[in-house]
Amino acid sequence: MKWLTIFGPGAVIASLTIGAGELIFSSRAGALFGYRLLWFFVLVLVLKWVLVFATARHMVLTGAHPFQRWMDLPGPRGWFPMVFLFLALVCFPIWVSFHAGTLGTLVAWMTHTQQFANGGGYLVWAVAMLVLVMALVAAGGYATLERVQLAIVAVMLACVVVSVLLLKPDWPELLKGLFIPKLPAYPSWVGSHPEIATRPVWVEITTYIGVLGGSGYDYLAYVTYLRAKHWGQAGGPLVTPTLLDEIARNPAHTNRRWLRAVWIDSLLSFAAVLVFAGVFVACGAKVLSPQHQVPGGTNLLTLQAQFVTPLYGWLQPLYFVGAFLAIFGTLYGTIEVAPAVLREFADALKPGNADKYALRLRKWAVWWAGLGGFLIIIWNLIHHLTGRAETSSALITLLTPANLFTGVLACGFICLLSLWTDSRWLPRALQMPWLLRALTAIAGLIFLGLGLKGYWDYSGWRALGIFAVTLAAGWLLAWALRRAAR
Image (tube, rainbow, N blue to C red; front, side):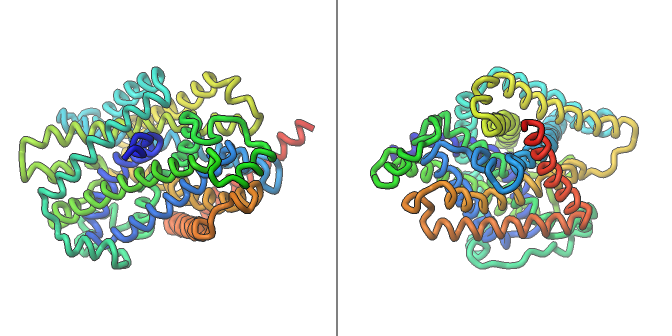
């Protein structure tokens, strides 16, 4: 039980997915596909746990973040971290606007102001919520983030377990969904939701993969958070070759013993996510599917109140408080991930930069993510005010292309590069065990395959072309910087 006391960075990652991943998309999956996707959710979470543990163990053993290792990939120095930075500049504001917009839909429903601003009332509330969160982020940091997210995870975990017990789902079907793979297919009634019926099934499924358990940037931030915990070599200087040989010869070395902390912390994180996912899939299948209701558009969170209100009407306010805290925590955590990622990029580019410009880097990252999200929300609000709002599914439509990279393709790249990192820098005695290596390779190939298929189904050559141009831009900029330095 004493290992539970170390649960911290994993709680941050778990809480980042509770809001969007479970309240919205797990409920949506249950409504559309019933229990048949549970086995797939288990597979995705196992593969993401492999990603996190494989990446974090290298940090604990050596003190090196993935960005620091990727600087030495073949080609111009730093070209691949540059690609991740480019995509972060685009994706973080999109994620922030999505979470703020989701929070706005909940508050607008609670205050009956959905029709305000020509149907854009939720966007007005999104602006207000984003301003509030930015104020809290400005006064916080990792320690505050960990305390807030630990509390949210604990309260929400207790509530959802009680909910599923009261609803009494079809347990045999739930267990079959967990262990018997079935291919996904939309139900016959999906035609009553044209914005879903026209959306390829694998784009829908890939969205769940990207949101469930967090994104690639969340996992890069997780490794950074280990610095704050000082587990093993994390938080210290890069390990020297002499010390690395000493660690390899000594199975009881402190750095190797701290791997158990990473194992426990990450395992608890994904176990909590699996509980949340299973509960909300079951609730969606039990309550929403028979009514042909699907969370979407500006109705992302209100339908889920039915998970508790038919049983005990007085629980409705409690549900909305819990949902508000979950999404609020997700928005808060997403903005906090941005400075963690920028810090590591700056330190990899030039060691010492992260400490020298710590406050400046944090300010830039927070304002980029927050102000970028604010501008996206304002742009959507203007479209509502001028009567040019496209569809009610604008939030999910906006999220999909960003999610395909951050939550799926990025995970594939991180997995495969973890194998390269280990083989390049670690002696044989410290490299991943064969089973972990095999799982990491399988995870990388699956995430890459699903991500590329998702992009193809989403918009064909256009999406793949944009990604190829981004890779080329990272290469060219790194080459130009190297040439200028010479």
